[in-house]
Structure formats: C-alpha cells, structure tokens
Image 1 (cartoon, one colour):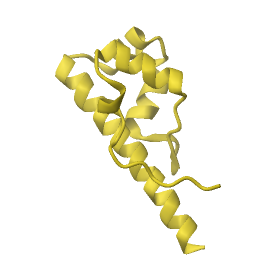
Image 2 (cartoon, helix red, strand yellow):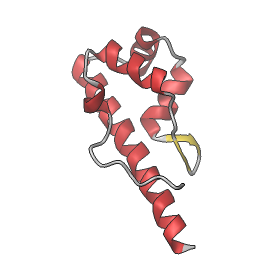
Image 3 (spheres, rainbow, N blue to C red):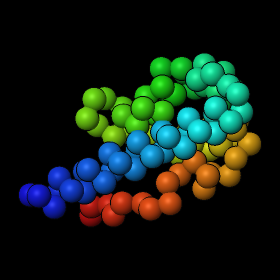
Amino acid sequence: MSNVATEDERWIEFSKELGANLARLREAAGWSQEKLAHRAGISTFTYRKLENGESNPGTPANPRLKTLVMLATALDAPLGEILPPEVPAARR
C-alpha cells in the first residue's frame, strides 16, 4: 500500500512542477493568468487549477493533451518546456 502512496505523491509533485513551469513561462511573458487562459482558449478557473497543480484539493491536475498544446502554443514554447523532465511511472 505504501508503494501506491509513493506513486500518488510522485504524480502530485509532477503536477506541481508542471504548474510551476507554466507560471514561470507566463511571468516571463509578462502576462496575467487571465491573459494566458484567454490566449489559450481555456477558462481562467481551469488555468488557475493547472498552475496550482491540482484539479481538486489533494488530487493532481490531469490536463488534456489539447489543453497542454494550446498553452504551449499561446506561450510560444515547446511542449517539453512545460512538462517536467521526469515522468512518474504509470500504474497498469
């Protein structure tokens, strides 16, 4: 059971790192959360959840691929710059 908790913790950390990357790129562009959300075609509420790394308290964010691509496009950044370098192992 502790192995599952460790895996969940890794996904939570991955989501928080994803959010930190989004915030860093957004701030480098000089944009508000609202401006980036608008440019990416998503709601500000959804963007804020992504930047916080959570979809609900204690639940890691799990954005759709389309959302990530739209954010990368809006930021004029490669998708790899948004995603954290180390991806946690997925359960089968």
